[in-house]
Length: 295
Image (cartoon, rainbow, N blue to C red; front, side, top):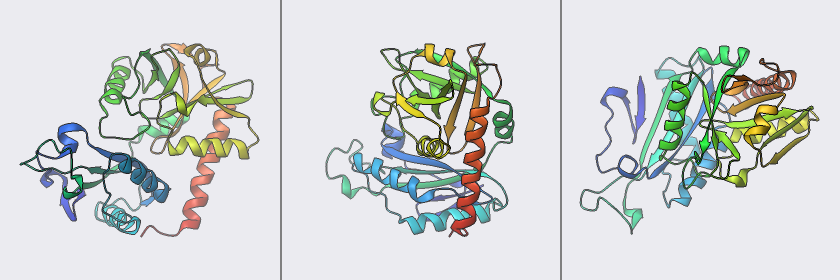
């Protein structure tokens, strides 16, 4: 598999990052991940806009233009044989480093950021999860993504530990819970509940990463005439829901059919979730048909 690293296209096994890089040493960097459909990225400009906004919060420049990123993605898809397949794209920008100043605190502009772009095929299991639904587990209170949950930084240890807990419990997703016991998000997704024909999702100001796909689901729900509210939710709300689903750019819309070995609703994907799945897939088809080939 070829990757892009600081201006070069390299086999993944030959790609090297400095031991002084701030992303490696301190998690000092940002990333975004999204899905390619038959080699074409969905919603790349919006993901890059968020990447730049989050990088700016760290005083970290993003050295490539949007056009350059699009060209890199297209070339990687072609050279990796993924122009006819769906793939997961990740763009990582980290601080870079200086052996003479391994903990840089000032004059950060002198450091050259590291830019890494990788692609990997979407696992076939995702289609089965979308069809049949997934099981999730609730984590203990205090399982938020860290001190900067609204930023997609390289400090992903809380989310990684959450995913490992989910795997150990036979689940595909872990639901993070705030210190005061409110639902936040999945470890790699945002969460939606449905009850009595109404949608709700945890409020963004509760300390979570409000993802791009969450934003799109809210827009789709409004277009379908579905009431949808962002508010504080508790684990009891999840267990009492008629339906639940997660939303993310790579995994798309996944029905949650069970939580901690208890069924959600009837224990199978519900009609409202299916409507959102269908609307999202139609959105993907429209945007890819109207957007022209990736450049």
